[in-house]
Length: 327
Image (cartoon, rainbow, N blue to C red; front, top):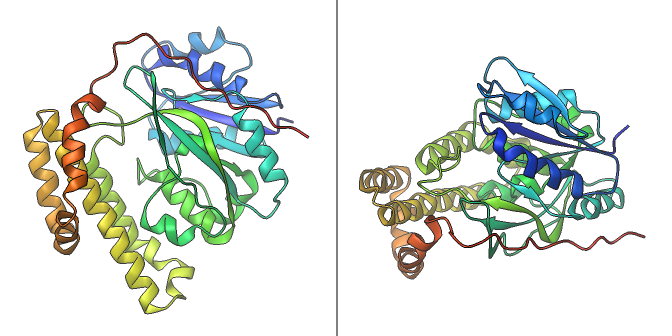
């Protein structure tokens, strides 16, 4: 039986698969199962996967979106530990071994996560990484405020799904955030404060599922109101705690819209920028007012946004490696 299964979902991007699959195998010297879920691609993804060693290929005849495809990958996999990897991201060498070792040393923990090196549109890594700091332990309240867990860095126990359930396909783009919240409500969380993946960051022009800030914020606000704020730990908390987490959540959502408005402006997408600003005002005018009292960060973003948005034309840089630490 494989100790860990890495699930890669893909749709009409078979040219990216060899790099992602190779990185998944290189991330561990354990028994690793790589499951590629072809979410009803029109191109010959099956042929690409058949040409690569040690790949379990799962074909979906109807497009189910990332969350639905990930669920099918979970059902088709066998590992005790599970992790997701987007087809345009890269797992760093040795990173999976460290994370599984950490989980095996803490049997009560639900999942472990790390940092992501931010990559440009062409896949080249930058010198930036996210998050700068990785909270651990009881991170439930922090996760209600914002998602700081890069999806591809998380390794979680299959056993957790027996209690919290699978991913929700109705909330594409935040399905992983929702899963981390549900797991962290019941289990402590581990973190390794070092990079585990190279993550292609979404921008207003990248065309990724998370690049539409307005849609992501609307989904998140609805989920917070209708689901997350009704979770047992929230309902059992004090009114002051509920008010504090609500304020911080809406501050984060409005900041996200304002940042994307500036980035959209830098990319020449004026209509999108205007829509984001109006949506931020509708969401929480108080949060917008608080954000506008701190204009320095937005001036800085406006200065650096064009450099961030444009893909680098330089030759690929060498990816950093994670040194294996084994007893």
